[in-house]
Image (cartoon, rainbow, N blue to C red; front, side):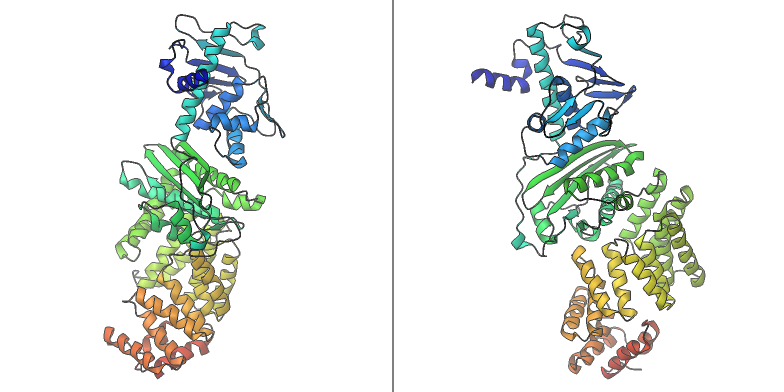
Length: 592
């Protein structure tokens, strides 16, 4: 018992072990085109240094050290993860990464072989392994190469201990950022604000910016948004919209609370640190119901590889949650945006501007300029084309353009450019529906909304098309899609409530319509729209006192407001629906 304790202490405090020579810390293994250095914790393939996560490096060392036997799954977990609970997905992910790092694959298995139901074995020939000892030359060869061992029993014992120390150090480095044993308070299904979906449900929290430069916030936000977008394209997953996930940005919040607030089982959180052309991203996936970490990783990459990194995170989340993808679903989820990092950064800056000053004329103009610069650098980058269309439509809506016809034509062209690059963008068809609605081309609104909603849309697309379904005379579908949008985006904006209330009004569900519109009025007390729609709804429901009160409040705030304005702006495919609203406003006392 005493010797076991001494050995354990030695693994963490090697200087206390009297027989351990300080120089005995380096093992260099050469196999195939690879060289693995346990002292420097480096792996080279064809002479090129490979970026290898600590747990993957530890796994390689363990398999090499035990290459004469099969290493079981339990042995791997005990050595690399300290015996802690690890999902099959996490283990498979590390083995796959180890193979990739050494130029192997799951198909060839020329270096790391899987033995079904038994474990794994390192099967490549070790050409040379060197042990550097103080006072003795390196170059002790393995007996498989030389035919006999060049080490005495004491030396071999020291070598095993040295390798063990390296494994512990590497594992410690990996677990510094991922701690699956950390105590996490479990979420309660009974306390969840929403019913837990049947399919795997997840919220991706904004990645914390650990860079000293606060201007890198937009870079971290973009990575989070892109991962959310990619996961949202997978039909068998339920993903919370970024608008709701971002309400937790910069806040110290428990995973358990996030899960209960949003009604999800899994939470993905992480951090990002950027320095020049280098970026470090740390992520961990947590099962809030069990309080367990089920996957975690640290990535050290160059900025130019950021898109591959995002794809890798998406793949690992899908694998950890055991979601099966068809080839088409995987292609949509992992569709690459651009290889031009400068164009991507310009795009991110413009998006950040819009987020901070969405209805500002100057910010809208500056964002437009950045989108155009991104497009100039990479005309095949679809995202800035879509955003350019959006800012052009905003110009038209708020009268910030001298030529509305030209701006609208440019908006249509920009969407067309995006679709020519990628014809499976739900946002593109949503914007075409919006443009058709502005032009009162209602049949085209229907065509484009149906297409948008068939392409695994985001909550934003669902809500936008939900609004337009009411205006083309399909309130049942409006209710369906706005309800889905509200579930995926629990911290929805007030426009969602307006859409919900209007759909219920059209269907004659006056109590529900009034409840939604009153909630909108309380959340946005300065807005005129809920007052006017409430006046029409109260009048139609026969509650004339309340209808008149809404009109009175409207005129008090906007003395010149009359029926002329809603006559101009209301857009419904069925003229009778528009007339229905106008008649009720007239009954409520709104002047001509």
